[in-house]
Length: 309
Image (cartoon, rainbow, N blue to C red):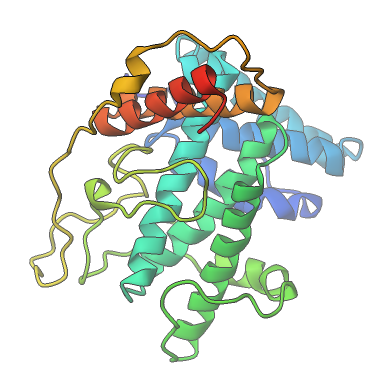
């Protein structure tokens, strides 16, 4: 896609809008990297700002300028289905956030602690906030957001204090820790992540997520440049993740009989689940991940024809 034209500048952020400052920063970071993500980050900030304060002069002025940015960005992205079709936009944003989460989680489980990983955890939590522009979050996304935000704060504080963080999933002892430390921790994260010397981000070697009922195979759900400006080879090869070849899953022969049984009654939840599988399949095809697309389409077909997953 052609480079986007510069957007109208924003005035200084009013103090009332402190809670959306990091979402706006994430939008700026994605203007060139993924304008769709940037658009929805601004839309979330706009909707949230309207709820906080739309009456005082400085807030009204800021929201007016933010609306100008949204309109300019939407005009430039007018032919992009992720902007014109809500279901495509929702899938794009959710998959992007989840891929960023999986990158950070993979680094964490491997004991590779660095600022780029911390930023990825925190940015993933911000993007899950943004998903609310499409409606209520799923339970899985709520858990992802809470865990990612807490992990970012926990690891940041450990490194700041010269301590070694505990790798992998650990219990959140105090829920309030995240909220109290969130702003201080995020404020210290670099706008452009540093270049870690011990690992290289490789989207084709992601672990499958154990946090969601929908299987998320490796390398399926975000652009190859997610997260921001992750370094290429640094010359250190001992811990560099190596890509693995794609394998196409076998097709279940039973699925060739696509005639639904007459006594099957699908619930609204079944339809929503099938729709979600199809969204993930469509998103996977954007990144030429045939394996993920086939797996999710098989799940949708099985659910629609048998009423079971």
